Image: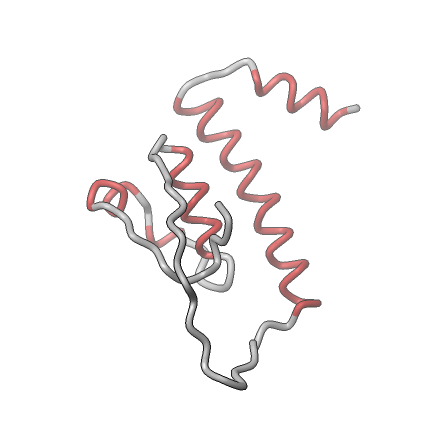
Length: 105
């Protein structure tokens, strides 16, 4: 995905029903959570180019020092959750052993 944080998302009804929205991350980074959850359930994702429109003089309210650590931690948690859900619980895959060995070494 080129820009998962653009705020523009189209999603089909089946995918909407599959996601547990009560467990969804509620802040900046929610699109990352959606993408991981869609990946776990083997939904396809397509990057569609959009032209964002910003007001002249508009400034972002993102606090980079805070976002770097919160999103970084979110991505680590989502990675571990995805490995557990997709490669252990839903359908075992030997790739898990390589992740464990790689983490150990």
